[in-house]
Structure formats: structure tokens, C-alpha cells
Length: 144
Image (cartoon, rainbow, N blue to C red; front, side, top):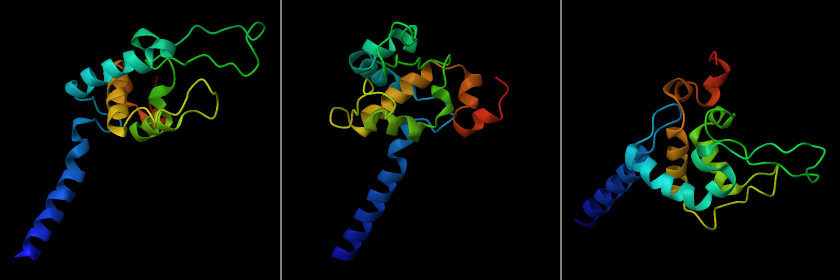
């Protein structure tokens, strides 16, 4: 009897792991509305201060007046290259931070992977269907 319970537990665990991420879109797919709503709240709380409302990013600062090594927060809407990255890579960047600038910290001690996936869902909601279709490695083949 315990072998059946163990097998059932393993099957349920595998199904849970397999289907847990379905609320989040795959690279190139439109995100789930519920994930977008949760992600927007998290974005406003943690990301908007730098990446601005609606992901427009910070205004560029002339190289003549900015401090050495200072990098402005890039737009996360479709006006920049964020959509060139797949979902997993975006999640990794948010969790691990950027080596390019200390202004983009690692959020792994503040946000869970699930929360970051929701933020990515919100960011993707800022993109048009055409950009979504070209997200990730496919961006090299798209005429945009």
C-alpha cells in the first residue's frame, strides 16, 4: 500500500512541477492576465523607480556629464532590446542582477522566482503581438 502512495505522490509532484508554470507564457507567447496583474503590482513596487511607469526607462544622460560607469535603466517596453531575451533569461537577469551595472541589483534575496515570472509577464504585456512573436532568439529573423 505504501508503494502505491509513494508512486501517487511522485506522479502528483511531477504533474505539479510540469504544469506549475503554465500561468506564465512561454517565450514569444502572450502572458496570462492574472500573472500580468500580479506582476504589475510587483513592478510598481520594485522596478518602476528606475525603469519608470510603463517601462519607458530613464532618459539618457550625455556622456559628458554622467559619472563614469553610470548606466541609465533601459526601457523594458518594446522600444529597447528587452524582448530580444527569452523569458528564462529575463528571469535570470532580474534574480541575478546585471554585471554591466551595479544599479541593477540581484533581486534573489527579495523576490521569489514566481514573483519575478509575474514581473516578466507584466513586462511582456507592454509589447505588441508582433514583438511578442519575435521575442527571444527569433528576433534575429523578424523584420522589425
